[in-house]
Image (tube, rainbow, N blue to C red; front, top):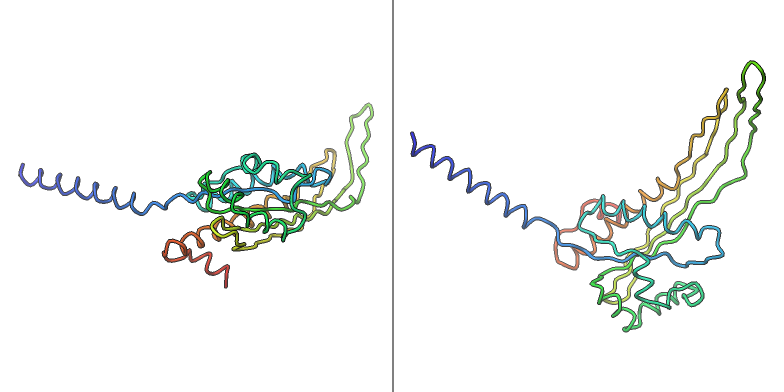
Length: 232
């Protein structure tokens, strides 16, 4: 009985050891990418949203594909300074492509260990609000009554560039429309449209699958099924 118990323990330990090594072998290799908002125009009303969109996209990309390591745009801008500053950045996509085609520019990014660059743009535009809310107060109390609404549209775009050959591999976009509403019966209750969060999640997912698929193709591995469906 003692020998049988020892044999079972050895078999269990061997299985655990093999499973652990198999899991390590199946762990996806890290895919280093950079992210930057372009064109960055400080006079644009959407300029202040760049940081929020970057944070949202980065979070979603990591959630969908944890193996993707995203270098923030501040680091990218510092690495390429002053080439992506508002006063010196390329004005057109052709100009941006020409910038990445310069060997010394790509070399700066490659020295950071990057393989791809995500270039995003867009933001949220709000319509004029409608409706009204009236509020009042008296000796018996107070409150509000009414209803207001405001339409909003979030449109985001992103291009994925290869730093090996400065080729734009993929272009993705997401557009979500919604309406902010605030009914008031005694107290106003705001109900946000959340178009930015929805568009960001959608675009982040598409970019993550595109990166994973491209990396798999370069490594000669089977592509991500979700990415294949999106490309079709």
